[in-house]
Image (cartoon, rainbow, N blue to C red; front, side):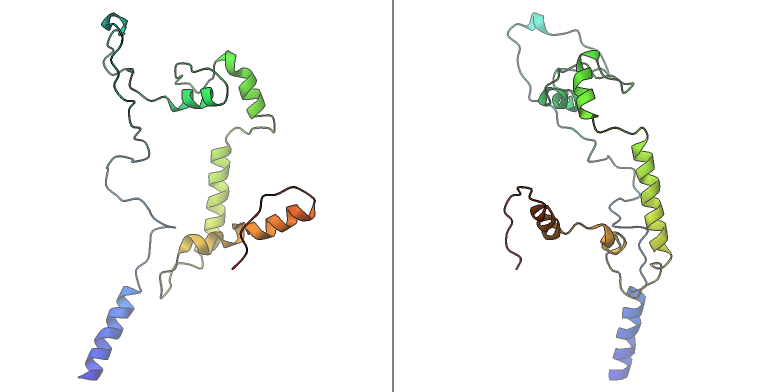
Length: 171
């Protein structure tokens, strides 16, 4: 009786360890539901002083309660809120802001370049992570060499004489 229970438990443990994830920290599902990060809440409704001030309705177009994240960022950085452009350009009045933001250089196609480099890093590690008895966190396993040790960086900058904020003691 004990042996059969042990065998059943062992088989169940073996079968449960064979689960293989599709990727690193898979946070998505296969359903076609909405992208929760693309949903922007609208501004609160406000009644104008006179209803004659209301613009003409544009079906499918923008309205007064729509958020404008790009315009809000431009205003926060000292620029002016402009109507959103669909071609990715910026108004000439914000050229000083764009020049200052890209003063260290800006690369075209940086997202594609980073995606290719990340795919290369994950490709090197995927050869050895296909089958495991346990299901460890693949993200930490692949990117452990890229983690920043905050205390080591703090000590490095302090040794160079840079004023740094205080940090809690290592426990």
